Length: 131
Image 1 (cartoon, rainbow, N blue to C red):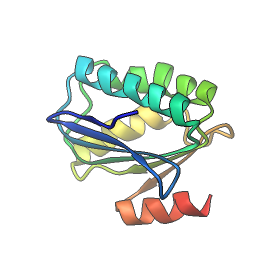
Image 2 (cartoon, rainbow, N blue to C red):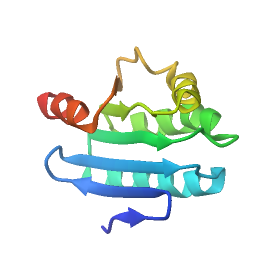
Image 3 (cartoon, rainbow, N blue to C red):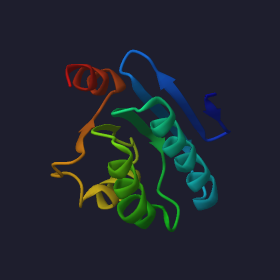
Image 4 (cartoon, rainbow, N blue to C red):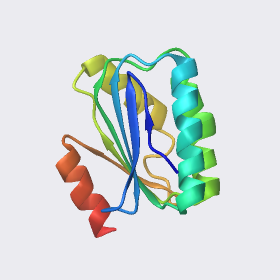
């Protein structure tokens, strides 16, 4: 399975964590976002992945519809596909961080998918490799 790259997103299989890494950069429209996460679903299923790192440092704000999509569709779909550990690198923008935390609030304390928020990708990788 190939990696997925657009102007605003880079999604790759990462052998070091046996998971995927996604780096989002700037503002991603809802349709671009859905295209990206649908590829994430395929990657999780294809490789039977349990871990992912999602780097949102350069994300300015979730587009309209993305918060609800993450909460109501992405998390339940990833749970169904067997994902267990999600490391988020927090956006540098305060508005991006607020948007991210709002979208993740229902799953922060989930038993099925453990999520953690980090300041750097390096911290996130350490946590993922330890699990």
